[in-house]
Structure formats: C-alpha cells, structure tokens
Image (cartoon, rainbow, N blue to C red; front, side):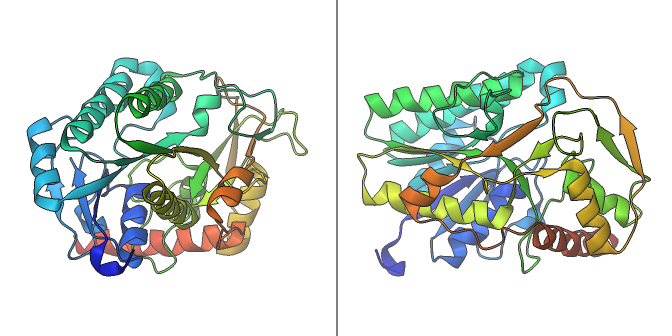
Length: 337
C-alpha cells in the first residue's frame, strides 16, 4: 500500500492524551487522518495542522455519517471515553453511557457505513486483580470497577459484531501509559490528572505540594505497588501496526496487551523523577486504595510476535524526561493562552 492510496482513518478522542499521539503516529506514517472530539477533556492545540477536527460527540449518528462520507473513512481508532477509575465507582452510569452506550452507537454507524476496520482502546483494568503478575491475553477478565466493566462490555460487543458483519477489530489492552511525544508535539495535558508520573512531575515543578503514595504494605520488594509503564509513543506505534495488520488480512481480528513486561514500584518511579529532575519530592504516605493489586505487569509477547512491535522508548528515565519536557512546554502554552 503506497502513501498515495492509503484511506482515511478516523480517530475518536484524537484531541486527548493517547489519541493525539495516535494521530501523530498515523500522520508520520503517511495516513490521512480525521479527528472527532467533543473537547470535554481534549485540547484543540493537540491536533496537528492539516488534520480535520470535527468538534462533536461519537453518539451523534448524523455527524458520524457525514464524516464517513466526507473523509472516505476506512478505519476507526476509538479512544473517546472516560478513564478515571474512582469516578467510575462514584458515577457508574456516566461510564456505561460514555464508554459502552456511545461505543455501541459508533460501532453501529461504522457497520452501516461499511467501515471495515475498528481498533479499540481497552485496558488492563478488564483483568481486575489477576492471580498472576505477568498477565497474558488469556488471563481471566474479572473487572472490579465500572470503568473496567464498561471497556470489557465494548470488547464483547466488538467480538459479536465481528462475527455478524464484514468488519474486523483490534483490541489493545493498555497497562500504565506515560511519557510524551519525544519531539514535544503532544503530551498529557489534563488538569488534575491522576497518572503517577504526571503527578510527580507536576510536584517536581512546584505545581503540586506533594505526591501521595497509596499503600506501603504490598507484597512487593519495597512495599509499594508495582506497575508496567509503557511510553505513549510506543503505544501509538502499536496502533499503526495493528491497523496495517487488520487491513492486510480482513478475516483476522487481534487482541493484544500493550506493555513492556517489566514493572516499577511507586517508590522506584518517584526515585527516577527525583533523579531526572534533580529534585527531592515530598512523598505523603496514605492508605491503600480499594482494588489496587500488588503488582500488574503485562506479557507483551503476543504483540511482539504478531506485529513485530519493538519498543523504542522502554526506559523509565526516558519516559520521565519526555514527560518533563512536555510539562515545561505546557506551562508555556498556558502562559501564552
């Protein structure tokens, strides 16, 4: 497939954190891209020049039909949705509406328009608290919060739709996404974000007074929770490879974990932020959060084996350095706004 005959990819939530990096990866690889985003948590500045932005909701069937017609959409990368786990517990109906019901509308519109390829932003939260530390795609999915359930329900919808209609799908289950575009074209911009590395860098830059450490009595080497952190640009690259694989074989659908297969504890991450920023973070010890597993690490071997995916930024200090550069740029953007 040459650059000249690549069809358009619609990215939902393309003004958000992960979606904007997928847009950059697609554009860098020569794919025509369009974005739909209601800008509730996304940012217009995250959309590169020359990429059409349709400001609207994925539940707007008339708008979706217009986008598909105007852009000749052949594939969808679906990132739009709500992602804060504690909020999902407090307001489950918001999550079943934004993540499940609206996804159903989007999938139905894709089927009606004859869009043949669908890539879904899923999550390791569908595994709940797994019995194993290195989680593969066959590990039982037992979500423990409405966020995880809302994503798992969409996975099930897609599996059923693929069986009934001429469409294939790629389901990518993310572990802890972090970092920013190495060229500082995009990054995590959400105010009040709960991602550990984002929070720690804000603290290092004086934007927060301290960093909360939720629990120090886990069954891990230093007592703090261990997670698998993946650079957002490596994750975006996996989406492009998934798109190419789906288009190469329309009879195949894929489900893959996205992580590095190694974990870092909360204290190890904060030590790395201290090291990269040359600051000493104020760590506030707090109680465990309900439902947090001791350790959650991916087995990414299927992704590597199936797509030949090779991470380019699998280094914790690199992830933190890129996030730091973006946070500094973001301060400038806010000053200039």
